[in-house]
Image (tube, rainbow, N blue to C red; front, side, top):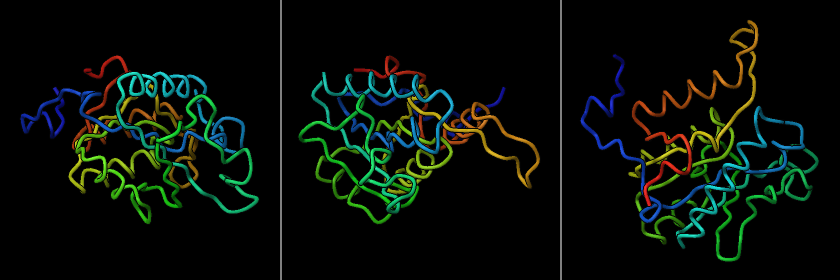
Length: 198
């Protein structure tokens, strides 16, 4: 039977508890819902992100929103509705919003400083897209010493062309393969918000 490196190392495979974690919501923006980059299953994933966010808010635990900042007139233009965070997971007063220009949410931003101010080493991560900003941020977070949990049903992606233009790789395949790769060493993957301990 296949095992992850974490399992082979005897690591604790329990997802991070809400009471010990910071929720990081990555790029939950209209661009992925009604804009030029619609994602497979985005409405269900956004609703699941909403439920995850509510779980943290109800418990009074910290939340950080990541917002991708694109060029004027293009994708993720923050002066256009397409760049806005979806109303279902819109930030509340006191919840930091970190703007980024690269897939890795730590690159060129104040995310690390913000997390240091909160003082926690456990992250729960959700958002978009699985193979891009979620993956890049999760990998970077491990390098910075964080213990990561991903919530699978609050993350999704889109179909991609196969290497060399050979066919299409379905979004579901990319999502599963990316989460499997991340689960090998970089994060514990929980199916839903309900799978997180209090």
